[in-house]
Amino acid sequence: MADALGWIGAVGGTVGAVTGLAGIYFGQIGKKTGEKAQRTAETANETAAEAVRIAREANRIAVEANDLASDANTISKDALAVASDQLDYAWVLKVEDDGSAIVINDCAHIAVGATVVVDVNGEVQATRCGENVAAFKQLSLDATRAFEKHIEEVRAHPYRNSISSPGVFITGSAGDIITTTFRATITWSTESGVERSCVVKNDVRHRMEYGGTPVRLKPERQATRH
Image (cartoon, rainbow, N blue to C red):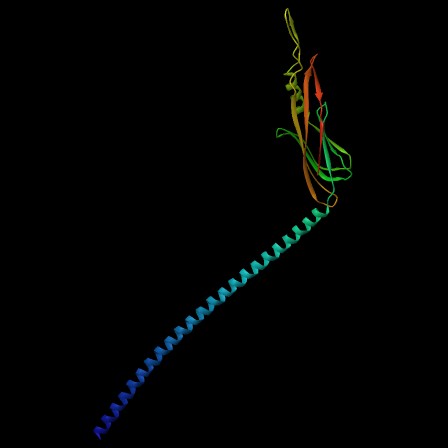
């Protein structure tokens, strides 16, 4: 009887050990499975985040593509407007003896929103902005300061009187020709809204003649077509 009980106890101990080992084994499997599931979840989260990033980038590229398409359409329209607007403009710059700079729209088309800047050697003398200049009409700007400076330079090169002495005669001569270039930079729009610009110049030329009088020389007006 004692032997039977001992045998039963041994069997029970063995079963318990086996059960314990099985528990440990399945516990390890469960742990590894949980870790694998966690890694899979983390990978899935990273994949989802990357998908969101890619979607945002694709959306940004699509927006930029739309903007480029819009810009291209605008440029195409502007190019078409320029190509179809072939109006011929002519501008003239005159400088009067009182120092007025006269800019003339010497054509049959209105210049819309014209801006005119008159300068001499890069020094601005006068400006007018936002002017609608009708066909063959003109704008007057004050360039007196530059014109007076030009005349001062002319007077600094006077007429040379003749010299006569026994056996010697030297004829007199006019003073040096002094040239000052006045420049008008003009920007405007045609009636259809196409922007134009041009630069027109006028070379003002004087020299001193006998009697101390500055004499103006030709040419005195130049036209530019655009």
